[in-house]
Structures are given as structure tokens and as C-alpha cells.
Image (tube, rainbow, N blue to C red):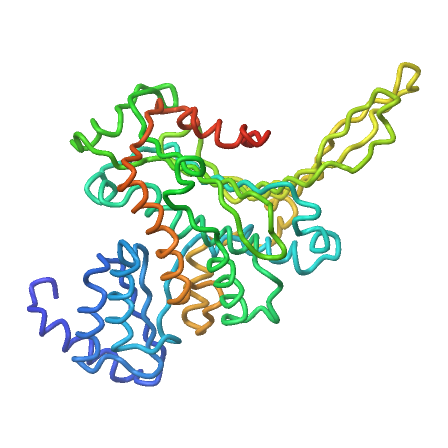
Length: 401
């Protein structure tokens, strides 16, 4: 079979599919986005597409909004939108889906999930590895396009969306699209205050010396960012005035993905005269490597209180593997591929979402280029440039680490 010509392979595939003409056919295109359209044309040209056929496409879907439209148009020439599954494995993670359960299956949090009660939100997607031989691809993308445009903006949407009418594909994706369209633009007026670009230099990881980005994989001189931090706003009723701090990068101290929801301080403390200090409640949603949900509450430290009352933060910790020890854990792709077979697009990204994400990202990239905003250096194994710390601390906010 390996020595057969491509036409022979196509005929063999057609013969094997002939007996299952009415079955679901799923084509998974883990290739360059420039090939998506051509492959879809070949599938149709060889009569391998049926009404039950589905096609999966991975990121990157283009490299900007214009190229994304070209890719989507090319795929759309062959397949209807309900047959196209744009996969983002973050959406298949159990803790990400549990974010929906936390918000919409409990009366405790959703009434507080707004600007009246939430001070700010942080989203961190940190990687401890470098480019790992992917320098050729990565140097043409950078952290903003490789991580923020897809994974991080999707997490942001799930944190910020309005309650959908049902847990159905279009109901969910309609609400995510509203969030994307409400993102305040970052442009020449504010990019220097709201964005930080970084690029790692030589340092240490896991106790071992590691090279800088420019020395890795023979990349050489380049201004590609391996780290990005953003301060964002969603201009709608629910989130007016609440900053969202996002950061992602390579060669950071640890591999972690988490969402931090910091609630506002209580309006008045009755414990001040007793020497006690209160701290705001914090919700930590750990996505990887540990899947856990932790809510910090203030509690009284046991004692007779002769010298005043002492309060301390106490975590209510739900470690998902412990809370659900019985069911076998599944990887994100397994869930998503089963949804693909069943035709459920709830956890897949719609075309207009992708293009809205790119439109917002493009404005930042164009501003960086026009204003000459270059990456700031940071040591491998650190939490990024000091400017990223200042981005949050100017507002009295400290990154959760």
C-alpha cells in the first residue's frame, strides 16, 4: 500500500467506504492551513463527501483575519458550516467544561459574576518548554497568534459570556461571539500601556542551562515574541470597568493553565477594631496540569481572642481526580472526537468566532509593527519581563503564582 500511487490509494479508500455510504465520515486535517481548501476539493472531486461527512481543521486557521476568511471560504466551498469542526482541545478539558457547571448549575456564583462583585480576572497559560524544534513554525507566529488568538480568547469567552438559552452549539457560540465583539480595541492609543511583548534569553529550566530563543533551532536575529501579557476590557453591562489580565509564554518556571477570579473587598469590616484584616475572596480554576477548583474564604483562627481576633484565608478545595475518583479520566481530544462523530458542535469554534478573534488580534499586531514595539528580554525560567509585573501592579494587582 505504501508503494501505491496516490490514485490507487484513493480507489482503495473509495472501495472501503462503499459499504458504509450512509455512515459518518470524518476527515481530520492536521496539516498546514494552506492545504485545507485543496484537500477538501480533492475529497469532493473523488466523490468521498456525503451529507454525513465532517471535516476537522486545527489551528492555525490562517495567520490573520484576511487569510482566515480565505481558508474558511475554501473549506466552505465543499462543506456546509454544520459539517466543519474547528477544534480547540482546551474546550474539551473537564475543568473548562466545569466552568459552565460552576456558573450555571449553582445559585451561589452567578449572581456575583459581574462588575459589582468582581474586581478583576486573570488568565495564565504558561509553558516551561521552549520551541522544541518548532522554530520554523513558531517564528512565523509568536505567542500572540499561537496562544492568545485561540486558546486564551476561548477561555476568556467562557468566563465572560452571558447565560446561553441552552447548552446547545449555536446558543453557546452566539454568546461567545458577543464577548469577542465587545472587546475594547487595543491600538496605537493604548498599546504601550496595555500590552507587553517578551522574548526569552538563556537561563535555566529544571536545574539545567537552556539557550535563549534566538539560539534555539538556529533561529537567529528575530523580533518574534515568546511571551505576551495583556490588560483587556469587555465593554458591556456585565463587565464594564473589570480588567482582564492575560499572559502566556514559553520558558516560564512551570507548566500551568489557570483562571483566577478575584472578588471585590467587603464594603465594611466589623473586625477592624479587633485587629483583624480581611482579604478578598478568590476563585482559582486550575486547568492543567492539575484540574482543581479552589475558593478562598475568610475564617476565624481558633483561640480565646484575648489580644484581638485573627482571621485567615481558608481554601475550599475541589481536586477533580479526588472528587470524581470513580469515572475513568478522559483526555480532551477523546471527548471532542466523540462529539464530532455525534455531530455536536458545542465545544467547537464557529467561523464567525475565528474571524472575530483574528480581527481583534490583527489590530494589536499592526500597532506593534507601526509603533516599533519590540519584545523585552526575560531570563528563561522566570515569569517574563518585569514590564508584565508592572502592567498589573500599576492597578494594585499581583499575578497569581
